[in-house]
Image (cartoon, rainbow, N blue to C red; front, side, top):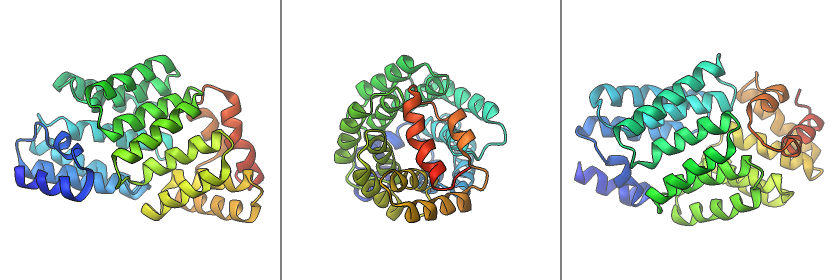
Length: 276
Protein backbone atom coordinates (compact mmCIF):
# COMPACT_ATOMS: atom_id res chain seq x y z
CA UNK A 1 0.00 0.00 0.00
CA UNK A 2 2.85 2.42 0.80
CA UNK A 3 4.37 1.82 -2.65
CA UNK A 4 1.01 2.42 -4.36
CA UNK A 5 0.52 5.62 -2.38
CA UNK A 6 4.00 6.86 -3.20
CA UNK A 7 3.38 6.31 -6.90
CA UNK A 8 0.07 8.14 -6.63
CA UNK A 9 1.81 11.08 -4.97
CA UNK A 10 4.21 11.39 -7.89
CA UNK A 11 1.66 10.84 -10.62
CA UNK A 12 -1.46 12.73 -9.65
CA UNK A 13 -2.31 14.77 -6.61
CA UNK A 14 0.67 15.14 -4.34
CA UNK A 15 -0.06 15.01 -0.63
CA UNK A 16 -3.76 14.48 -1.29
CA UNK A 17 -2.98 10.86 -2.18
CA UNK A 18 -2.19 10.19 1.47
CA UNK A 19 -5.69 11.37 2.33
CA UNK A 20 -7.14 9.01 -0.29
CA UNK A 21 -5.19 6.08 1.17
CA UNK A 22 -6.11 6.81 4.79
CA UNK A 23 -7.87 3.83 6.34
CA UNK A 24 -7.49 1.48 3.38
CA UNK A 25 -6.76 -2.06 4.56
CA UNK A 26 -6.79 -3.80 1.18
CA UNK A 27 -4.80 -2.81 -1.88
CA UNK A 28 -7.60 -4.02 -4.16
CA UNK A 29 -10.05 -1.60 -2.57
CA UNK A 30 -7.65 1.32 -2.96
CA UNK A 31 -7.10 0.40 -6.61
CA UNK A 32 -10.87 0.31 -7.25
CA UNK A 33 -11.12 3.70 -5.60
CA UNK A 34 -8.42 5.14 -7.85
CA UNK A 35 -10.09 3.67 -10.94
CA UNK A 36 -13.33 5.29 -9.86
CA UNK A 37 -11.58 8.63 -9.53
CA UNK A 38 -10.40 8.42 -13.12
CA UNK A 39 -13.92 7.67 -14.33
CA UNK A 40 -15.70 10.36 -12.32
CA UNK A 41 -13.29 12.98 -13.67
CA UNK A 42 -14.68 12.49 -17.15
CA UNK A 43 -17.75 14.45 -16.00
CA UNK A 44 -20.07 12.61 -18.37
CA UNK A 45 -22.88 10.13 -17.80
CA UNK A 46 -20.93 7.02 -18.80
CA UNK A 47 -17.98 7.94 -16.60
CA UNK A 48 -20.31 8.57 -13.68
CA UNK A 49 -21.88 5.11 -14.00
CA UNK A 50 -18.48 3.42 -14.20
CA UNK A 51 -17.20 5.43 -11.25
CA UNK A 52 -20.17 4.39 -9.13
CA UNK A 53 -19.49 0.75 -9.96
CA UNK A 54 -15.84 1.08 -8.89
CA UNK A 55 -16.70 2.80 -5.61
CA UNK A 56 -19.33 0.19 -4.80
CA UNK A 57 -16.82 -2.58 -5.47
CA UNK A 58 -14.23 -0.83 -3.29
CA UNK A 59 -16.76 -0.72 -0.44
CA UNK A 60 -17.51 -4.43 -0.77
CA UNK A 61 -13.79 -5.20 -0.61
CA UNK A 62 -13.15 -2.93 2.39
CA UNK A 63 -16.35 -1.77 4.17
CA UNK A 64 -14.41 0.30 6.72
CA UNK A 65 -12.58 2.40 4.08
CA UNK A 66 -14.29 5.81 4.17
CA UNK A 67 -13.22 7.62 0.94
CA UNK A 68 -15.19 5.35 -1.47
CA UNK A 69 -18.40 6.18 0.41
CA UNK A 70 -17.72 9.88 -0.12
CA UNK A 71 -17.05 9.50 -3.83
CA UNK A 72 -20.08 7.25 -4.20
CA UNK A 73 -22.04 10.17 -2.80
CA UNK A 74 -20.47 12.49 -5.36
CA UNK A 75 -21.70 10.29 -8.21
CA UNK A 76 -25.23 10.99 -6.97
CA UNK A 77 -24.44 14.71 -6.72
CA UNK A 78 -23.39 14.65 -10.38
CA UNK A 79 -26.60 12.84 -11.33
CA UNK A 80 -28.65 15.63 -9.79
CA UNK A 81 -26.45 18.51 -10.95
CA UNK A 82 -26.37 17.55 -14.58
CA UNK A 83 -29.79 15.99 -15.06
CA UNK A 84 -28.83 12.32 -15.17
CA UNK A 85 -31.05 11.24 -12.26
CA UNK A 86 -34.53 9.82 -12.79
CA UNK A 87 -35.38 10.99 -9.26
CA UNK A 88 -33.31 13.93 -7.98
CA UNK A 89 -34.96 13.67 -4.57
CA UNK A 90 -33.93 10.03 -4.20
CA UNK A 91 -30.43 10.86 -5.40
CA UNK A 92 -30.15 13.59 -2.75
CA UNK A 93 -31.18 11.06 -0.12
CA UNK A 94 -28.25 8.91 -1.25
CA UNK A 95 -25.94 11.93 -0.96
CA UNK A 96 -27.14 12.65 2.57
CA UNK A 97 -26.77 9.02 3.60
CA UNK A 98 -23.23 8.82 2.26
CA UNK A 99 -22.27 12.07 4.01
CA UNK A 100 -23.53 10.75 7.34
CA UNK A 101 -21.76 7.42 6.77
CA UNK A 102 -18.41 9.09 6.12
CA UNK A 103 -18.75 11.38 9.14
CA UNK A 104 -19.65 8.43 11.37
CA UNK A 105 -16.58 6.55 10.17
CA UNK A 106 -14.12 9.45 10.39
CA UNK A 107 -15.26 13.02 11.02
CA UNK A 108 -11.67 14.26 10.64
CA UNK A 109 -11.89 13.72 6.86
CA UNK A 110 -12.93 16.73 4.84
CA UNK A 111 -14.80 14.44 2.43
CA UNK A 112 -17.81 13.98 4.69
CA UNK A 113 -18.08 17.68 5.45
CA UNK A 114 -17.83 18.55 1.75
CA UNK A 115 -20.62 16.13 0.94
CA UNK A 116 -22.81 17.40 3.77
CA UNK A 117 -22.14 20.93 2.56
CA UNK A 118 -23.50 19.97 -0.85
CA UNK A 119 -26.68 18.64 0.80
CA UNK A 120 -27.09 21.99 2.57
CA UNK A 121 -26.50 23.80 -0.71
CA UNK A 122 -29.31 21.91 -2.44
CA UNK A 123 -31.55 22.82 0.50
CA UNK A 124 -30.58 26.48 -0.01
CA UNK A 125 -29.05 26.56 3.48
CA UNK A 126 -26.10 28.66 2.35
CA UNK A 127 -24.50 29.55 5.67
CA UNK A 128 -24.52 25.91 6.74
CA UNK A 129 -22.96 24.90 3.41
CA UNK A 130 -20.22 27.51 3.82
CA UNK A 131 -19.61 26.40 7.42
CA UNK A 132 -19.08 22.79 6.32
CA UNK A 133 -16.69 23.97 3.61
CA UNK A 134 -14.74 26.05 6.10
CA UNK A 135 -14.54 23.09 8.48
CA UNK A 136 -13.21 20.80 5.74
CA UNK A 137 -10.51 23.35 4.89
CA UNK A 138 -9.60 23.72 8.58
CA UNK A 139 -9.22 19.93 8.85
CA UNK A 140 -7.11 19.60 5.67
CA UNK A 141 -5.78 23.05 4.70
CA UNK A 142 -3.68 21.79 1.79
CA UNK A 143 -6.44 19.72 0.24
CA UNK A 144 -7.26 21.50 -3.02
CA UNK A 145 -10.62 19.75 -3.35
CA UNK A 146 -11.76 21.06 0.05
CA UNK A 147 -10.90 24.60 -1.05
CA UNK A 148 -12.75 24.00 -4.31
CA UNK A 149 -15.88 22.91 -2.44
CA UNK A 150 -15.78 25.95 -0.14
CA UNK A 151 -15.43 28.14 -3.22
CA UNK A 152 -18.49 26.52 -4.80
CA UNK A 153 -20.56 27.16 -1.68
CA UNK A 154 -19.51 30.82 -1.76
CA UNK A 155 -20.27 31.11 -5.47
CA UNK A 156 -23.80 29.74 -5.16
CA UNK A 157 -24.35 31.98 -2.13
CA UNK A 158 -23.70 34.98 -4.37
CA UNK A 159 -20.06 35.59 -3.43
CA UNK A 160 -18.38 34.82 -6.75
CA UNK A 161 -15.51 37.26 -6.26
CA UNK A 162 -14.52 35.47 -3.05
CA UNK A 163 -14.95 32.15 -4.84
CA UNK A 164 -12.53 33.15 -7.61
CA UNK A 165 -9.78 33.80 -5.05
CA UNK A 166 -10.24 30.31 -3.62
CA UNK A 167 -10.53 28.61 -7.01
CA UNK A 168 -7.17 30.11 -7.97
CA UNK A 169 -5.68 28.90 -4.69
CA UNK A 170 -6.98 25.39 -5.34
CA UNK A 171 -5.37 25.43 -8.78
CA UNK A 172 -2.04 26.52 -7.30
CA UNK A 173 -2.17 23.69 -4.77
CA UNK A 174 -3.01 21.15 -7.45
CA UNK A 175 -0.97 21.95 -10.58
CA UNK A 176 -2.33 18.81 -12.27
CA UNK A 177 -5.89 19.96 -11.70
CA UNK A 178 -8.70 18.11 -13.41
CA UNK A 179 -11.56 19.51 -15.46
CA UNK A 180 -13.76 20.33 -12.48
CA UNK A 181 -11.35 22.94 -11.14
CA UNK A 182 -11.35 24.89 -14.39
CA UNK A 183 -15.06 24.62 -15.13
CA UNK A 184 -15.86 25.83 -11.62
CA UNK A 185 -13.54 28.82 -12.03
CA UNK A 186 -15.16 29.47 -15.41
CA UNK A 187 -18.60 29.54 -13.78
CA UNK A 188 -17.45 32.17 -11.29
CA UNK A 189 -15.95 34.24 -14.10
CA UNK A 190 -19.26 34.00 -15.97
CA UNK A 191 -21.20 35.21 -12.95
CA UNK A 192 -18.89 38.21 -12.56
CA UNK A 193 -19.12 39.18 -16.24
CA UNK A 194 -15.56 38.14 -17.11
CA UNK A 195 -16.56 36.28 -20.23
CA UNK A 196 -13.20 35.96 -21.96
CA UNK A 197 -11.68 34.48 -18.81
CA UNK A 198 -14.66 32.14 -18.52
CA UNK A 199 -14.12 30.97 -22.10
CA UNK A 200 -10.40 30.38 -21.51
CA UNK A 201 -11.07 28.38 -18.34
CA UNK A 202 -13.74 26.31 -20.10
CA UNK A 203 -11.34 25.47 -22.90
CA UNK A 204 -8.85 24.17 -20.31
CA UNK A 205 -11.60 22.08 -18.72
CA UNK A 206 -12.62 20.61 -22.07
CA UNK A 207 -9.01 19.89 -22.99
CA UNK A 208 -8.89 17.69 -19.88
CA UNK A 209 -12.39 16.18 -20.19
CA UNK A 210 -13.79 16.66 -23.72
CA UNK A 211 -17.26 15.42 -22.75
CA UNK A 212 -17.60 17.46 -19.57
CA UNK A 213 -21.24 18.53 -19.66
CA UNK A 214 -20.81 21.34 -17.15
CA UNK A 215 -17.91 22.85 -19.08
CA UNK A 216 -19.93 22.93 -22.30
CA UNK A 217 -22.90 24.54 -20.51
CA UNK A 218 -20.74 27.31 -19.06
CA UNK A 219 -18.92 27.77 -22.37
CA UNK A 220 -22.20 28.13 -24.27
CA UNK A 221 -23.36 30.80 -21.82
CA UNK A 222 -20.02 32.63 -21.97
CA UNK A 223 -19.92 32.62 -25.77
CA UNK A 224 -23.48 33.91 -25.98
CA UNK A 225 -22.86 36.57 -23.34
CA UNK A 226 -19.87 37.86 -25.30
CA UNK A 227 -21.80 38.00 -28.58
CA UNK A 228 -20.25 34.91 -30.17
CA UNK A 229 -23.61 33.41 -31.11
CA UNK A 230 -22.46 30.84 -33.67
CA UNK A 231 -20.03 29.32 -31.21
CA UNK A 232 -22.65 29.47 -28.46
CA UNK A 233 -25.16 27.56 -30.60
CA UNK A 234 -22.53 24.97 -31.40
CA UNK A 235 -21.94 24.45 -27.69
CA UNK A 236 -25.68 24.08 -27.03
CA UNK A 237 -25.73 21.33 -29.66
CA UNK A 238 -22.88 19.68 -27.77
CA UNK A 239 -24.77 19.97 -24.48
CA UNK A 240 -27.79 18.26 -26.01
CA UNK A 241 -25.57 15.55 -27.47
CA UNK A 242 -24.21 14.83 -24.01
CA UNK A 243 -27.60 15.05 -22.28
CA UNK A 244 -30.69 15.51 -24.49
CA UNK A 245 -32.85 16.04 -21.39
CA UNK A 246 -30.93 19.01 -20.00
CA UNK A 247 -33.10 22.13 -20.11
CA UNK A 248 -33.35 25.67 -18.81
CA UNK A 249 -36.25 24.62 -16.61
CA UNK A 250 -34.08 21.96 -15.00
CA UNK A 251 -31.20 24.38 -14.49
CA UNK A 252 -33.51 26.95 -12.89
CA UNK A 253 -35.06 24.39 -10.55
CA UNK A 254 -31.96 22.46 -9.48
CA UNK A 255 -28.93 24.75 -9.58
CA UNK A 256 -29.00 26.41 -6.14
CA UNK A 257 -28.12 30.02 -6.88
CA UNK A 258 -29.16 32.27 -4.02
CA UNK A 259 -29.49 35.28 -6.30
CA UNK A 260 -31.94 35.11 -9.18
CA UNK A 261 -29.65 37.42 -11.14
CA UNK A 262 -27.01 34.69 -11.14
CA UNK A 263 -29.47 32.17 -12.55
CA UNK A 264 -30.36 34.66 -15.28
CA UNK A 265 -26.67 34.90 -16.24
CA UNK A 266 -27.12 31.34 -17.47
CA UNK A 267 -30.73 31.29 -18.61
CA UNK A 268 -30.77 34.44 -20.76
CA UNK A 269 -27.66 33.71 -22.89
CA UNK A 270 -28.43 30.00 -23.14
CA UNK A 271 -31.94 30.75 -24.38
CA UNK A 272 -30.48 33.16 -26.94
CA UNK A 273 -28.20 30.33 -28.07
CA UNK A 274 -31.15 28.01 -28.66
CA UNK A 275 -31.48 26.04 -25.44
CA UNK A 276 -35.07 25.37 -24.42
